Length: 382
Image 1 (cartoon, one colour):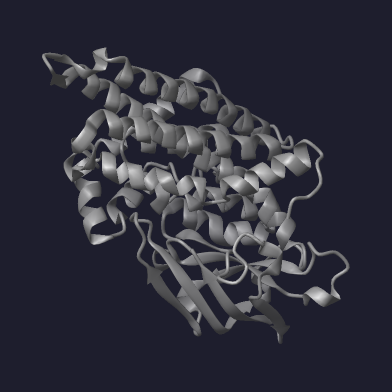
Image 2 (spheres, rainbow, N blue to C red):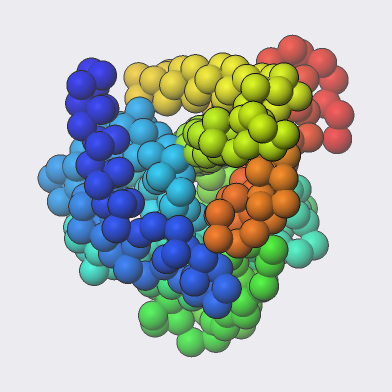
């Protein structure tokens, strides 16, 4: 995809986001409400179906285009947290789903008639140690009977489908520790025994706990091969980390744009505060950090689209972009001073939102462990 096409995509996203100004997001934030209208507009614009092939009703674009979409959402002051999962969970179906499964789910997802926003992996007792998850799925008379609990399953209340990682073979019976987990597509509209409990957090992220008590899932909803689900999920996580990194770039640029403009307008002691190096230098350094991280995001997305291994690049993009966005957020708050804490300027909302990305999805320390072990060849640290 050339630069001109990407510019057109960015401008189209900006046009949609212009209809959802700060007032819209502040009201949702107060009520901890889901941005239904925004999600609908993004779906109708074809942006959430960007990665779905044209034969299934999508745009057939790659990760480079998807990163541009999410970056512009965040640079416009909006938040893609309500709908970005539809992009990064798509890889599991696209790469490992059967043709029948794609035909059954993808056209409805592309049109917005079917919502795939939930990703059930993390559990209270295992956290980042995915191989220790305890949710089980037992095959019985052509159905998987699922029992267990997931946590931090965002958007579950606003999704029709959930991609679920569950153990189909006990740990003590597998030859390798990475085997025995499988991916199931759960239709939450038809799932007796499934219950959802919202978790109120410091930002409006619509996250939940999901409880499953003898939930029955048709065997035909198994994605890929039984027992190989961990590999499928890891494969999709490279796309997830790259897309989240793009959102961080958007946040970083939003903070810097706002702070630089404010520093040029705000006068104290008879002159613009931007004339002071104490204000100017942190913003300049944050700008450099964001732009450098953006190069790594672009590298990761390009490698992914070329079908190359992108684990190193995706992890580094997520690490650098999340830290750069936070650096920009800190500099922005310092520039605005007391007004940075006032709701009407949107700085405090974006400040809370961007802090999440150093913790999830995948924490900074886990990325550093990955780089140490898999890139630098040092001993496993955990």
